[in-house]
Length: 137
Image (cartoon, rainbow, N blue to C red; front, side, top):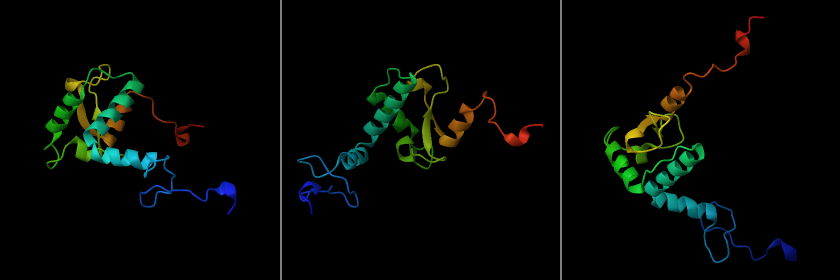
């Protein structure tokens, strides 16, 4: 092994990771973030909602406490599960929608919908996608 190839390389302590952690740390940044999100589900969901809403310019004055209260109110709507248990990246997973798209995220302007419903409603009023089979010539 050459001197420059890192004979003293430490790998992340997570199983099957393969990343190199920063000096003095056992886990890499990615694994640390995953572990934090798993242990802080409410705060993680709030931070994600806030960051995405700010990017859209739709962030209001929703606090973490108000968001926690809203999440508790959603429990029991779907087999004793609430938003935090049902959110995810798939079509039937839950998202937070704003019924009034012109108002920011706040307690009275948030409803839980599936990703499929949210996407379908977001396309209303927009022209259909181009389909070359529909061209008359």
